[in-house]
Image 1 (cartoon, one colour):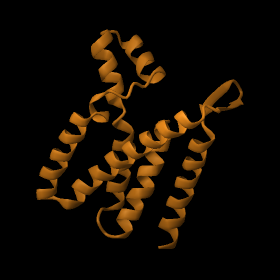
Image 2 (image 1 turned 180 degrees about the vertical axis):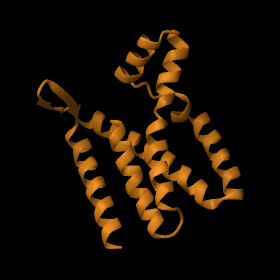
Image 3 (image 1 turned 120 degrees about the vertical axis):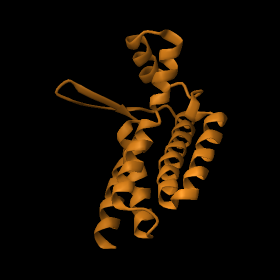
Image 4 (image 1 turned 90 degrees about the vertical axis):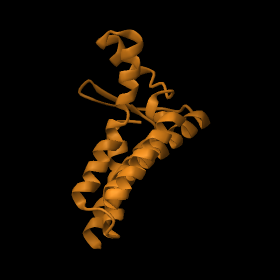
Length: 155
C-alpha cells in the first residue's frame, strides 16, 4: 500500500471517532501520520540486515517484507501493552494509537488478500511520472477521502 492510503483511511476512522467525542481533530491527523510511520519498520529491518542505506531503502520499498516488528505478533503485543499503559492516563491518546495501528494492519490484510486474489495492475503515467497501484487501492483512497470530507462537513 502507498503511504497516502494509510493516511486517508486512518484519517477517515479518526474523523468518525472524533465525531463520537473520543479523540480530537488534531489527534485524528496524528493517528493518520502514525499509520504511515508504522511502515518505517520495514526500512529499519532492512537497514539492520544490510548496513547500507541505499540497499535498505530499496529492499524496504521494493520487497516490503511483512515479517518486521510492528507487523509481527511480538510487535502487536508490545503495541497493545503501550496502548494499555497510555489508556490508564488518557483514553483519547490510547484510542489515537489504536486508530493508527488497527487501520494500518487492516489495510495490510486487505492488501495481501487482494494481491493474492488477483495480480491485475493498472499503470497511470503523466509526464514520465508513473504510479503503480491496484484498482482496489485507488477505490479505497478516493472513497476514504470523500467520506472524510463528507462526514466532517455534514455532522
